[in-house]
Image (tube, rainbow over all chains, first blue to last red; front, side, top):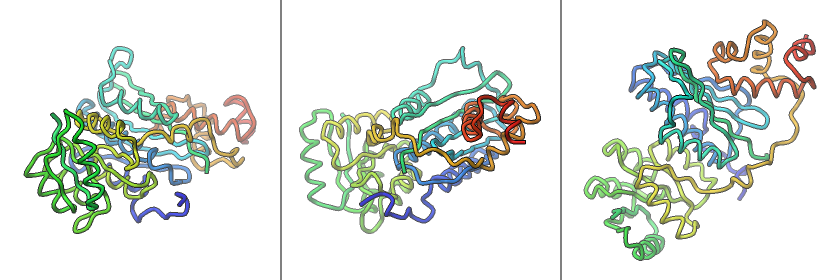
Length: 140
Length: 200
């Protein structure tokens, strides 16, 4: 039974799951989290979707721990051959060249790279932080 | 010693798991649940280090059980065992608080490794569709620019740098670059100046 023959459960799509995770996180932390989805959402392999959902959970947990942010943006961008997830905060930022990678981020990077993707962390002191996860799309 | 709870409604699978795990000196099955409700109760009673969780179970399904366990025991380590890696319940299970998932036909060494990793708080994912994913891009793109690509291109046309575009759209510069590469590819141009010219 091919994965394309199976309809995903109602409410089980990655954009919907991301929205719920972000909404719950915003409620718990009191920090607004804005979710945007661009491009044409297509179902990914569950392993890719799980990886992205875990990445959001970890990135948001890091924002809560370190960033002192007033706002967070979560953007899922579907492109023809890849999907990217950006979690951007407007918090205190840090110097990426001076910081060592925490366990959560290193683990996230390892999972993403196993799927042929990449993780980038863009930050500067005083200028917030953006965690960017890129995964290639599987052939349709 | 890693203390395990097995939540699985099929007795044969349960017995098989217990048998496999019995040979590992550092793993100990301390409880077995045949449905989700029993799993929630036993998780509270036994506080196991790792919970092996089936998704399709009577009374209370795996996703609902995970949610309840997670609500009461935030630190619980829950490894989902599923039959299909295309199971549409996997994502809801992770969302509900499962730490990772593994296929039931995984080799036993992989199961042991996954349990130990889960007990350390690591995320475990069934391996390697990676080979399928790697290097296999989809067919060449349509030539039409997407709404987001038009948005990026209009910012480029106004002279915005990648950093400025990233800031305006609340995305990373890495993602801006990806959009630009797609725009260049679709327009058949090599740089941003040519892209703006081609799009006018």
